[in-house]
Image 1 (spheres, rainbow, N blue to C red):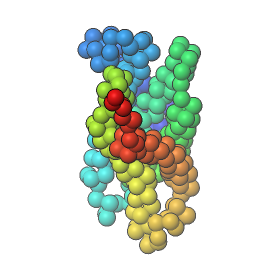
Image 2: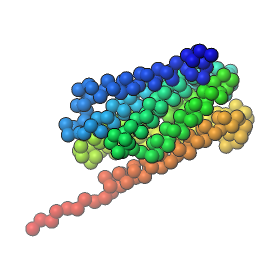
Image 3: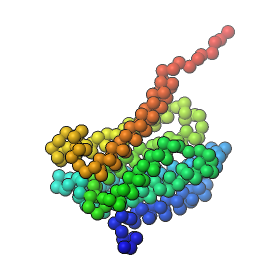
Length: 265
């Protein structure tokens, strides 16, 4: 079988593995990208920034395409689990290609800079395995476009996360500003909506289709979908709880903790 024509290897997978690293390398050489960070920023910071720009671009493409998929299909006339569309393997291939190169970035920065997040690495590896499983086992007969479209919307909060990182990297002024609290709140709400509420809504949609409650839905559909969405849901809940804890601490410190006043003679 020709590799490029295989239903298990969509062109978007090959494109992502090729284009994203090239974009990453190009960004690292552009002066306007370097100017985003303070002059004293080290090589690791600039390396991280380029990766975050690539991630934000990828997330935007996934969100826009996933939204188009969800609103362009008449789900009342087509089965939400088995309706076939070319956008489904495109989205899965793009996500798999991005996560593959981003996981390589995680390993590389550990070797070069001695830094890295075990939680991010675990998240990437888990999604990669899930994407590979999907392409190998489901592409031909059970493409599940509704599920893939909803999962694609999980990328919606990523640009906000990386924009916050860029502002934080510019100095302490942002850390003590109301703008930080606003962005933190936007991130918390968006993350909950697209990564937790979205997963729950898939259960509601499936339940409505099958005539059962949302919590019964996972037991009435293929385990192929249940395992993937449940795993993603649990990981996203952990991430959101971490964000919520940071948000509470930030808001409490900014609005409710009294700053010591200087005594005057």
